[in-house]
Image (tube, rainbow, N blue to C red; front, side):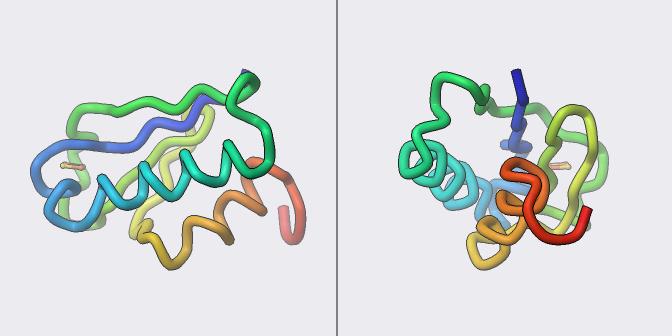
Length: 83
Ligand code: FES
């Protein structure tokens, strides 16, 4: 099962982690992947200046925002486009 973890530490929270979480959640619903992908919150990843920080199957992705969630989702979850 793919696991998406969104940092909900205070720095990432201020940078919009809640919105990023909501955007991923909406995409999982839209693509009917809620049963196959685990979406969870994570504690501070120690990269606060690069937030929002997320992890997909252990791979850290920085500078995530509501604007680029879909591109990341396509590339890392749907595995479309560049690998
Ligand atoms: S609060 Fe997200 S990396 Fe520190």
